Image (cartoon, rainbow, N blue to C red):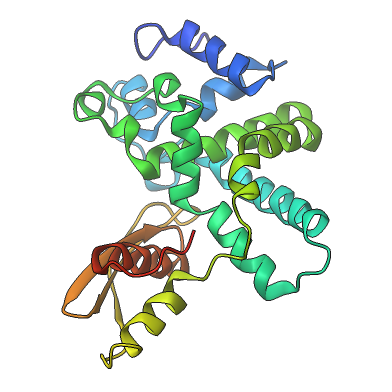
Length: 248
């Protein structure tokens, strides 16, 4: 069955994205799936209620699931090549920053991914296709689609092209935001940061945790697919508010 258009200019936007990625899909349906937000898949199904196990079908969630692993593998491989003398701790700090939601969203914006993303009409009105979590997930889904379509080699080319400026800018391993926040408050004689999970949503294979951290009389908030990453995002948010050291 032919996949109906989800927004005006979709075909040209998808073609332009392939040009920016320097990769042409043998199976374009994979790219269309990678660019289909959950809301658009639901709208495309006529708004019919689906059983719990079928929610998200037709969206980019499955491709985001594999794309997350593809990105982690390719980035770890690259870091081992790039920094042969560094140990796991430093490499892990670099990796965490390079695959963070913030970094993914930055790269997605740079390649104008939001212009190609299909979302439901009511979501498009409020600009959901430009929110950090949505575009970060879509970028991972695109990498997953590239992997399934052509293997690791083209996915590697995209990662090393898109992430090179950020990797070049990492003269030293970035400090984990939680560590940086703890050092900042302790250095000022303040109490240790307190983390609290205030929300958890999403399907079992792609959960979204919301964590709040309080320190220095202020609070920060972070969202991510696991609690540790959400805590780091919250710490980074609070550090920015407090004027503490940047971790990236």
